[in-house]
Length: 494
Image (cartoon, rainbow, N blue to C red):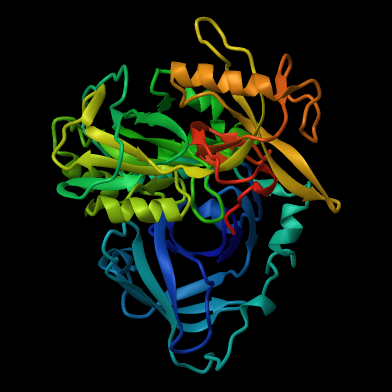
């Protein structure tokens, strides 16, 4: 049993059976207390050589993180002489002779919950002389091989590394999944695109998904296991996000072609475009959100109904640490949209349940955005470009207290949401309150900007606050004459 600190801490339990290591991931770790059950998710087999591995798995590799040999020893199946058949049948009883784990245990497969694609089992300690009345896992944190903790390994520059692409792992993984009939995978020049809709609606002919804030990506794995990740315009996203290379091993069947989005998730599970930009530079782990299936099991599925395609897709995801299935609800678009807005999501996508997949913008797929809104102070403007009249964009600010002093901080600009007549009217109003010096605490914020007295208040809709404290994707809604500029502060959800 290996203690593995990857995206989350868990224990990997492995039994040698049929010349390979049958493997289960145990999120809460094992127990020696009779009656305590531990969820054990059956994962792909590993090669025998992996049983002694202790070290680090590099970023971008499957299971990146630090690993120790938490326990080791031998085991005896007690109701069969063929452990492989017992595991295939879904139940195995055995006696463990480990340094930490001893005595009789049972592993049994259980029925997955509705919508669950993994294979859940339970590991529990049977009653015998080794059973304990209490078990504190934190008191058993060291390796039986080296005496080190996973933290020691993580900070050890001399620790061994494991390349999950090595032949042994590749062979074991491919043997555990289906190789579909090799037919030509469609060469997509584009992806299916959404039409912007004004407001949410209820309709049982439609399903509703989260609108993910990431990079749209068409994932294709050929029969040899070669992965390509293409943007909606055909760009090579694998070059930009090499940490996504493990997607080649994330499916139960190849060749396969999936439509989805490369995302970075925050601590609440929300996709963040800002975090995605940082991950492109730092190579931090990302996740692929899969929401449609174009080709699988030797079949072109684009003419199948969307709901049927999604059902097949759900069953083909082999690694839920790499791939997140985009769940949906049917019919209740208004309630779903309200929930998305309350949770700070970008919006929702509405899709006709029986729609086919067309590589063009379609009214069978709709996007309904849920943006943030608040009042912001106009502190200046930029010159218009080309044939635009009035101004290019408005410079925005909000008051913040820093070191006991109240200052107007620059929070970005807004250049959309104006009619030509409004551009002329606002520009005339701004010229009347023009000033030479910037009103913002940061001083001059844009080259060639024109500044005004901070008197006018604008209502602005935007997608999010960036980590730099600026509004993203802002749109002008109108002037607020009922609120004083001095009252405007940055509104941050708590």
